Length: 258
Length: 284
Image (cartoon, rainbow over all chains, first blue to last red; front, side, top):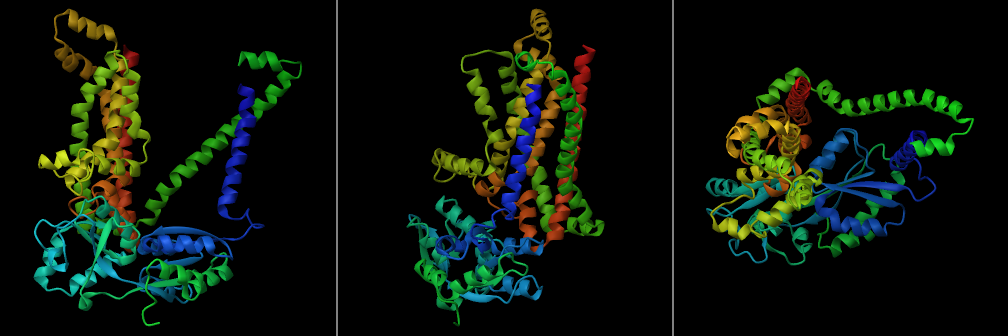
């Protein structure tokens, strides 16, 4: 048995090395290139569908709060494409020389989301009522910043009442959706597409026109991307093409001002 | 081993064995060196990247302070509950044989191998407003999800097995003639447990406590899913690190450095306590 340990260890080592090589992307040149796309959580369904249909490459998607993805890029992580739920983060990364010139490719609508069977909240006026439980995106997460923009347009007393009802600041929009679906909170501010994606488990209540923030999604090719040509093709498809069609189908709005 | 030796024991075998032996020791050393380099590098990086100035200034930050305070409070409460309930439970498992004992032990140990996200989902499915017993919990006027109490629940769930396992082993290691002697001398079962078993197992219990505490301090997934993240209420240090990561990487590093130091101190106390347990065993 002792004798067999060495070949076994060697085989294991070889296996690990092979796995590492494959993971690094160096080993799969002959196949289609693997395009890594870091995208805001709210883009999950649309990008998954677009990624599957994208002809130029095998698309690998990484979803998280846009701010976390931006922080990864600042720490030297290099996806090929970065797509955020705002324009601030891609603009900031472009300013720092980390991504190419960002493009605005979609819009969305911030809504009040409530569980479909919940009746505690009928509109914005209820969010500050005593006993109502809310979940928002954390500060710095686009969906959290949009929510705070809305609250900033309220009177100070109402704003404070709403903020006092916040029970969790979630790291991304899916966190807010999860708390709502589980009925842990009574309401949250999320994008309309996130409500649609729950297949009727959540209900959207529109915000008054005057308070509605402009939600714009920015995308950029990351500088030093391994597959810049495919990355640019992916971005182009988001602005006009398959990606854009998929976004519209999922309920995203055209890019604001486009 | 002996079967292999007879099968392969031809005239060439001694030569081959020597070659294998000669190559094996360096392989062991190389494996250990690779392991140590890999395991210590991230920890070293945290301290290399954290300037003492950043550390001090981030420790003055209100969000960081409140996260550390909350972590300390919640883990202390959780560990207290774990010790109070876990010690007698572990004693029972260590000293009695009953049908289904293996199943019970497996159930107790299950959270050890559960992904924290699964723990979070499970807690929501059990104790959330729409959970299995969530209605009954709510009727009793207890609210757990998104509450500090919910953090404690998550910590107890993930950390308890670390203590119970260690405590069970410690009780099993006691010389049973001591317990028998205590009973023969007329001490009640409870008195035997408190005056003989617990003191004799104390080093092992201490080591289990430190392990459970370390696990509780590091808890992230179950907490964010079940208790959410709200400063001063449910945002423990690991959750604060995650939130700081995007906006204030230096702050996240500094808070990480604090947690590394605390975790190292806990682990060291485990080593010292289990060293004491071994010495105690040898003295006997």
